[in-house]
Image (cartoon, rainbow, N blue to C red; front, top):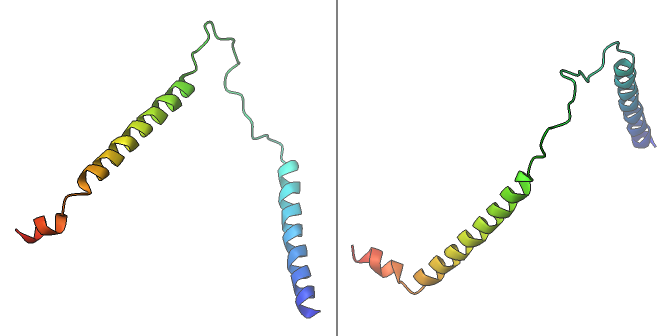
Length: 87
């Protein structure tokens, strides 16, 4: 019972601190959003650059992983311990 009571007291203290923070943020006279310039409609539509970049990098990652697999498979038959031991 004492453990439950101490846990309850800690939780109430946490919730009171949270309530205090929320009340102070609501009672402030300024907002966090400041508009710097007025919005405008663009004259020409921009192309979807992000999707092109993602597709290009995905293709590059696929090609590099294929080259890595070929490199690993090509060097698997080489007996590296014998080569290093002969030096």
